[in-house]
Amino acid sequence: MTTTLTVEELDDRVVVTLRRPEARNAINAAMVRELHDVCSLLEERPRLLLLTGGDGVFAAGADIAELRERGRDEALQGINSRLFDRIARLPMPTVAAVDGYALGGGAELAYACDLRLASPAAVFGNPEPGLGILAAAGAGWRLRDLVGASVAKQVLLAGRRLDAAAALRCGLVADVVDATDLLKHAHKLLDRMARSAPLALRLTKLVTDTPGGHPATDDLAQAILFESPDKRARMDAFLTGDRP
Image (cartoon, rainbow, N blue to C red; front, side):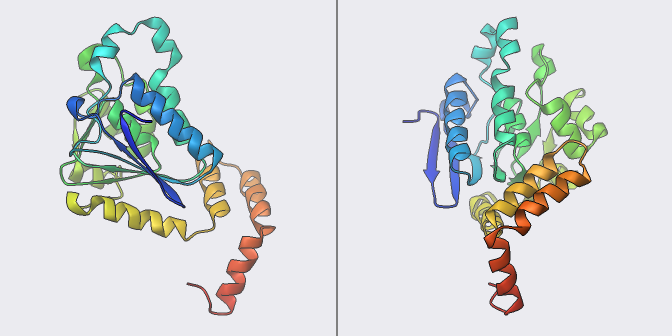
């Protein structure tokens, strides 16, 4: 039973909608717990993940009332950062479909996903320094890796907000789609990924996310795939013209 999310389980994917309309989907402790439960689900049975927000907002930040009461010990627990790291490490690809605000912790949640799609109303930003804190759940390095140091510093230090057009220009989002078609477009993207061999997709994500990269990592992953029945079946279908 979830109180802050709607979770739809399909055969090849799980669709999660953030639902705290009274707080513009702000990420609170209950949502963190429930997203951890989703991670457990996807670690036990790897599938694609589509993450979105309800009511025209992705997530307008972390819950400020809860943040106000947190101290040093809670900061050292990494309440949000541990969750976002876990989402980033999920075995199969993840997609964030962002309509409206993705600010603070909401932006960091989107950054933790492998791919992002946006509606024209999407806005990304990290206003944490204005509240006397920093974006400590991955923005300091994930955003830099996604858009480069200059744009990341504009967002993190100068308070710049990236609208959908700017997010597309700097590569933060893969595409901008009308809000009425956003989820449909996201599912098409997931459909395309789902046509790939699941093990190949999983190992490709693992190799791509490996810091620094190494030829031996590529070789080991490829060695596993070369021995997989799925690889032989797919290549046989290609050679006989039966490829879908």
